[in-house]
Picture 1 (cartoon, rainbow, N blue to C red):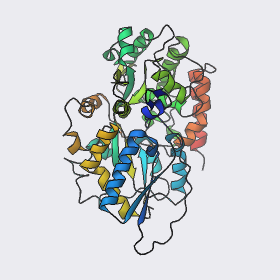
Picture 2 (picture 1 turned 45 degrees about the horizontal axis):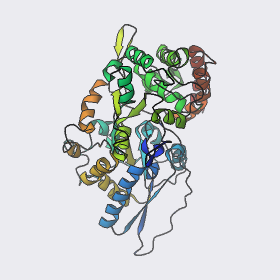
Picture 3 (picture 1 turned 90 degrees about the vertical axis):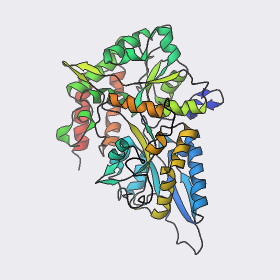
Picture 4 (picture 1 turned 135 degrees about the vertical axis):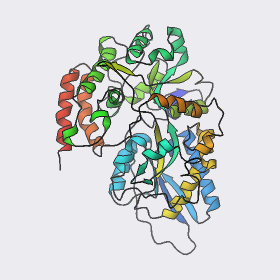
Length: 445
């Protein structure tokens, strides 16, 4: 869901900061830095869409001030376009061999982008005089383990996030629905029926011919072994493509039944801004999202979003067994490319981000769910940071990976998904067509 509506003094674009649900890129004009004159400052270039996010931009500016105060010879420069234009062009820049000194990367892109250009710089040596990698005080071990490549840490998180469904508590109360009613796919479906009527709907999955029209299906399908590859796991080879398997088809049919047969969604072409508008106007009662979004909007305007809540992705009782969701945690980290020109300056910036001061800024200023144990342990017991520890126990932990051709695959199959969501093709026929398209892409030299 993308931020594009307006609530009181803040815009909905500002309010809902979609990170785990978005794709796209950053158009960046770059030139090689000239040789530095004696006494001149080192320009640390940091690529991030987060400079356009109201809470996160304040965090970044505070970190900049701390870094420059502690290191008078460093000048921090943030650059990058909004998230909708960030991911693709970041990939282009990394592949060009002229990377930034640091950049922001989401969990879903982490492994794929590590294959671009010269890859990610190992950070262990740069951070050895800090507690950032300390097993008892540093980065949450779960987050650290899945941002480790070849035994070395490759990023410092600005936040982590628990995934589930954002929902309006007042809409649920009006319909006599409780979050605990939606712990299974069957319960979700029944609750969606109760939440629909009188011009209001339960859900509004995107039906646009782009990444957004695939995103929600992926999260449903991964639970039961579907996806472009089963559970979205390697090997990423044409022989392991499973987008036409039973899990993929069943998840698509489950969504189609709610969207098309029972009209529990507004219908028609729903792009990401429209989906956001539906949610913030409360025309729909729930949408997939994460704890970072919940906290972010509440930090921006507590009164306006007091009725906003989060519940976990549901289990699926299928083929005689109980399937638990495989997504438990998402995160955004800052990475130093191996080809960065100013590595020591980049390390100084990462040290501030990963310090207690930097992590507390992320929590207090932007309302983020932080990923450093020493900070989490200081938070009030009722905070979502503590709740997420229990929340995430409800999921199966499957290490996230990224097919390096996934963006190309999304582009190739998105129009096929749109036809399916608009009722023009069946789920089975769509997945068979997607299987052929994905194989074609994966078999290209």
